[in-house]
Structure formats: C-alpha cells, structure tokens
Amino acid sequence: MGKIVSVNGPIAIVDLPGLRMGEQVRLGEMALIGEVITLEGRQAVVQVYEPTEGVRPGEKVERLGHPLSVELGPGLLGSIFDGVQRPLKVLYETFGDQIGRGVHIPALDRDKRWDFTPAAHKVGDTLTPGTVLGTIPETASIQHRVMLPPDGSGELLWLADAGQVTVETPIARIRLPNGLERELTPMQRWPVRLPRPYVERDHAVVPLITGQRILDTFFPLLKGGKGAVPGPFGAGKTVVQQQIARWSSADIVVYVGCGERGNEMVDVLETFPNLQDPLTGRTLMERTLLVANTSNMPVVAREASIYVGVTIAEYYRDQGFDVVMVADSTSRWAEALREVAGRLGQMPVEEGYPAYLSSRLSAFYERAGRVHTLGGGLGSVTLIGAVSPPGGDFSEPVTSHTKEIVQTFWALSKALADARHYPSVDWNDSFSTDVNTAARWWTAEIDATWAARRAEALALLAQAEELSRIVNLVGPEALSDLQRWTLEAAALIREGVLQQSALDPVDSYCPPRKQFALLDLAIAIHRQGKDLLALGVPIRTLMALPLLARARRLKSEVEGGDTAAIAAFREEVGRAMDGIRLEYSGGEKR
View 1: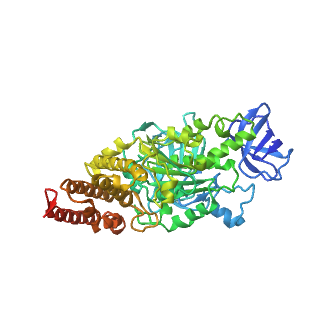
View 2: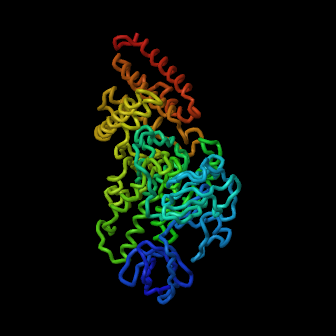
View 3: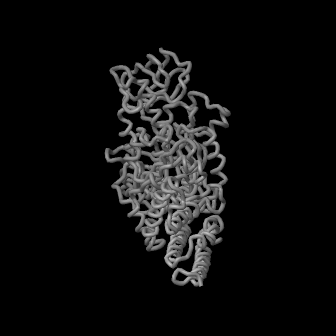
C-alpha cells in the first residue's frame, strides 16, 4: 500500500516502492483505475482512466500486480464495453445513465452458462499453446474455440465432459513442464499492450469485400491489411466506417468509438442490433463487439480503448477467424497522447504531439496481419482507422504518419461531400498498394478483364479532371465532341458506379459481381460512343439517349447480385447504339 503524492488532471504521482512499468493500480478512496507509465525511484507516474476530481494527496494507492488486461472468453460478441472493458449494459442497469467512479464490474458474465463440447484429446496428450480444448456456441453463427493460453503448455491430466459451464468453471487440468498443475477455464486474461503471439505471418491474398464499389474495385484492402479513412469534419468518415463494419466479409467485427461524439455512437448502438447480417441472415450484433469511449469520457481512456479493441480482435484471430477492427478515430487517440505528454512535461515536436507519435501509430497498425496461429490455423486482423485532420489538412502529423504506414488510404474530400457525392472518397488522393494482389482474386473469381476495366475507368476520371479545368477557363465550346463524350463517360462512372447511398436499401451493399457489371457497362457505353463519334455521329445525338440517365440509376434498380438484369440493359444499350450507327454512313446521315 502506498500513497498519492500529487494529482495533475489525469496524471498522478504516487509513492509505492516495487511497482513495475505498465502495472495496474487503484487510487484513492474511490479506487480509481490507473496504469504506471513512468518510474522514478520510489515514485511512479500513473495515468488515471477515470476523472480525478476530489482525489487528494495522501490518499492510498493499491497495486494489483498485473498490467492493464482484458478478459477473453465466450460472451464478448454482442457486448458493448467502455474504454477499459466495463460492460455498459450492466453499468446502466446498476447505476443509470451516469457511470460512477471506481466501479469495478467484470467484463464477462460470471453466471451465464454455456454448452461446452470437448475436443478429441486423451489424458496424457501433450498440449501446446493455442490447442483447442473444446467449443462453445457463442452465437448462432460463431463457434467459440476455447484455447490453451499462449503462456500454457503441458501434459493433459483431465478434460471435462460435454455439459454446461460458466467462464470460471474448470474445463481442463494440465501438468506444466516444471511439474506444477494448472487448471484451465473458458476465460483467460491478456495484457492489452502486449501483442498476442503467433507462429509466423502469412501473405494477405484475399480482398476484404465491403460492398462499397469505390473501396472494393478502385482501392481494395486485403484481409489482414492496414487501412485509413482520413477526412475533414462533415466528409462522412463515420458513415464509411459504419458501412465497412456492417457489410465487410469478415467473420468478426470490432468497432471502437474512440473519442467521437456521443450521438454518433448512439446511432451505432441503435442501428446495429436492427441490421441483418448478409452472411447469415441474422442480426449483425451476433458477430460484432462495440467499444464506446466518447469524447466526454476521460481522455486517457481513449488510448486504452484502442488497445482493448485490438487485443480482442487478436483473440478471435487466434481462433482462426477473419476479424475487422474499425477505430473511429485515431486522431482522438493521438490527441490523448498529446495531452498526457504535455502533463508530463515531455518535449513536443510537430504541432505539440510527442516525439513517439509515429512509433505508437506504427506499433498499433503492425498488430494487423494474416498469421499462422499457435493452434495451427489461419486467422487475420484487418485494422481500419479514421483520421480527423483539423481543417482537412492532410499534411498534419497524424495523417502524414498514418499515410506512410497503411497499405490502403481512402482520402475523403469535403468538396465531394458538399456536392452530395457519397462516399466522398477522392480517387485522386486515395491509393492502395494491394491492387496487384487483389487483381489476382478478382481475375480468378469475377472476371479476367477486371484490372483492365479498373485502369481504364481511372484513366477516364483523370482525363475528365484535366478537361474540367479547361472548361472552367474557356468554356465547353472549346472541347471537341470526343472530349465532351469523355466528360460524359466520366460523369457516368462517378454517378453510376462511384456514388453509393448508405441509406438506399438496394444499393447500400453491392456484391462483387454487380460491382464489375456496373463498371463494365460504363466502359462499354464509353467505347460504343467513341466508335459512333468516329463515324461522324454528332455528340448531341449521343447525349440525347434516354438510356444514359437510366444507366446512372441502374445501381438502385438491380437488387442483390442480379447481373442478368445489367446484361439485359447492356444489350438494350447496344441495340440503341446500333440503331444510331445504321442512320449514319461515312459521317453523313442517310
């Protein structure tokens, strides 16, 4: 037992010999949660995860003997936690709307009983870390694999029979290499700042399908990849991230609201339970876990919430699942680092951020990846972080460092958002380093011409950008018919392919085959129009085609992956173009 020496906002200096870096402590009469971040002789600097108002020097400090850790086991999915993994539903039922300070409620329900089915192990078998001891149906769609902890291995002495268990019920007993015996339960703990171990990394080869055309087709992200969604206020970052969380082709989704506005988290909490999972037909919450740490919660808890989320994601990765973690937003996390560094008197660098900002961001994103797990399977964690640059300045430190780290960069544009073009992903500033790898999947699974169609569409958009500058300077009369048709084709790609409404029940999610069919249609219309212009057909004749307007609306008319309807429309366009061709010969109308 020690005592508090001084308190400065979320930072406290305590006198307690024997503390270790990262150890968790409880401070004051209210037993506030804290974590040791600096050691100086007998004294230690502690960052406190709860408001410190009313805490006085001289109050007691109690060490807990372990670092800030999370509980891992069945019951995580469908839950909503705060930044230090306290269950918000239980807190609300116990304390009402306002969370009291010094409240310590376990993350996992100790009373809920689960159906346990043991694996086919025999007494005397040698078990290694990650070995599956049995399974528990956590939800209707997810079989939870109860594993031997990464720090445990030995000879199996006893394995429980099939039956109902709680997270604290012993299900196995092993003899450790040192001769001691250890009982195992369905629950384990793991420090949030320590990445969970694995055998080795594997190459990410399969794209994460989000159902958003501009993300999947133009700037793909692989399962196990690192992505960022930077954008100024009002550009639609939260909606993009919610769409990814709703529709992505992952087994598990971990959504971390880190320092964002409370009304946005309320929208997530109200919407997700009512959404249908396109993979299973059941509620989306059965494969989703939410960490809510809004802007009115303690600033240092923002940092903890990011690590809590990624540690849980790694736990399900170790079971062989593909996990997506969405962090909204890493800028608020970086601001928490800046505030704590300022309280500690550390030397600031760019815009007041600490010198270790880049290394912290790198360490976080490096926890993404597709790996061979200790249990012998394959699993992945895909990390997607929102970035909120002040004033939309992408040269500020958090955005610039993130841009250097991630493989996919979905830059949102305020100009596109103001023009009601959503998702407002700027195809000029965005990039993906995984296009060539993703192309192999699209070529094998969807169409061999995918890469060529994508490249042609991007080239059209780039040409249209240049032509738009000319139009702004000298007017559209300076353009040739072919250049005006290029502008029209680019507009068709923008409105008929890139634009996608999250509120449209038909177009909110677009399957890969429909994505390619719409893109291929736009390219085909452009090519057929070019051929007619070469015959001398006036541009006004092409622009007057009513089918062009319908081509823009087709995305909302064709439900699901009904590519046959798109193919039928394409044939209709072809017949209309052929009719125009028959009217002209040698550039003159017959």
